[in-house]
Image (cartoon, each protein chain N blue to C red):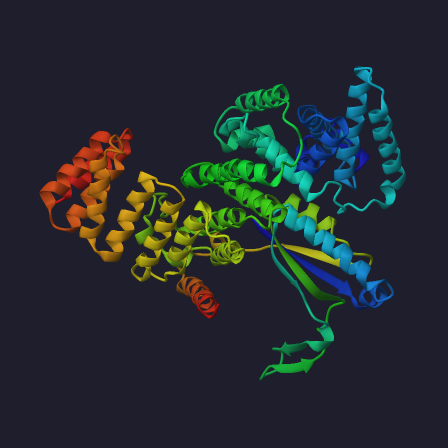
Length: 143
Length: 432
C-alpha cells in the first residue's frame, strides 16, 4: 500500500527555521530521505516552492476568483510530500515519526488510492487510465 | 495506554495489544537489518547476532502490548539486543574488551537517548550489502537464502515468511537454523568481497530477490493476499540494493523487470479470478506509476553503458509490452531484438522458444514455426510440453490443422499438470 506524507508547517515555524543553519536543515532532511531510499520504501515526492508564490482559485465566486498569495484559511501551509510504499499503516506512521521536523510542523499521512478503490467498469475511470498511459507514452517519445 | 487498560489486559490482548504488536512489526521491518549488522559487528558472529536480534524482537512482542510502545522503538530494540549480547558473553565468561566496548556504547546511548537522532544510520550501506551477501552465501541453497534474506534483510517474522510460502512456521524456522549452522561451519565472513569476487556473488543476491518476486507473482488471485506481499518485499529489497550498488546495471535491470512485471498484476485475472492472457488484458488497468518507475530503472541500467544483462533484457521486453497501447500495437521486432540480446548472454532453449513466438508475431507464423521445429529437432526440450504446444498454435494459424492437432496432443501427453493437459486437449479437439 502507498501512503502520502504531507508536510504542513505554520508560517511561524517556517519563519523560525530561518534562524537555523540552512545547510544543517538540508543535511538532516537529506539523511532522512537517504534512509527512506536505503530501505526501499520511497517511490516519489517533492518539495513545494514558497506559498507566497502560489495563488488560490476560489469557487465560492462565479466565475471562480483567483487570488495571489498563500492559501489563507488554514494555519498550516502544505510544503512538500513523500510517497512511500510500505506494508502497513503502522510502518507509514513509524517512518513519519522519523521525519526531522520541529515544533510548528505536522505530517498529515494519507493512504493513496489504487485501482481497487474504484469501480473498474466506470468509463471515466477507464479513460483516466488511458490518459495516464498516453501522457507517459508522449513523455517517453520525447525522451 | 492507561493503567486501567493494563489492569484489564495484563497480557496485552485486545485491540491495544494488537496495535502494539503491529507497531513492533513495523519497527522491526525498518530496524532488523540495522540491528543485525550492528550486533554482528559487536559479537563478531552473524549467526549469534541473528539469534540475539530475534530474542530482542520476542521481548518487544511480549512487552510493548503490556507496557505500551516506546517513543523510540528502534533504540529500544537495539539496546535490548546489545544487553543480550553482554549477557551472552558474560555467560561464556568472556568479559573481554568486546563487552567493555558494548557496555560503554550502552552507557553513552542511555545518556544520549533523550536527544538521539532516530534517522541517523548506525550502519552504512556497505554493512547492509554485507548482510545481503552473507544471507545469500554460496554455501546455502536457494530456499535457505530466501528465508534468511526475508528474515534478516527484509525484517519479516518467521510466521510471516511461512504464511507467504504456504508452509509451517517450523519449516522456515528449521531452514534458518540449518542455514545459520552452515554459515558458521563454513566460516563465512561478514565482509565485502573484492570487486571481482563481488561480481561473482551478486548473481546469487539478484536471483534470491527475483525468486521472492516470482513466488509472489506466480500466486494466483485466489491465494492469500499475503503472497502478493512477497512482490512488494522483493521490490523493496530491489530498491534497497539499488541504493547499495548504483553502479551495477543488473541491479537496475532486476528492479526494472520487477516493476514492469508487477505493473500488469491488476489485469492478470478476471473478476472470477481466472488468469487473463497478455493479449486479452485490459491495459487500462496496468499500474502506470509502476511502469514509469520500471522504465526509469531500465534507463539507469542503460545509462551505465555497460550493456544489458539478462535482467535488463527481460525488462526491455516487458517495457515493449508496457508502452504498447493495445496488443496490436506491440513492436514485436523490438522484442525479437531483446531476445537476441538475451540469447547472446547464454543459450537457453526456453528463451529460444519465446523468441520463436515473438518472431511469429513479427514475421508471421511460418518464420516462428521454422525456429520451433529446429528446437524440437534438436531434442533439447524433448520432455517439455511447451515446444509442441507452441508448434500446435503456429500450425493452427497456418491452417495445417491435422499437424496442429497432433502437436497439441503430444503436448498434452508431455505435461504433468492435469489442468494444463485438459486445456491442451480441449484446444486439440477444437482445432478444425
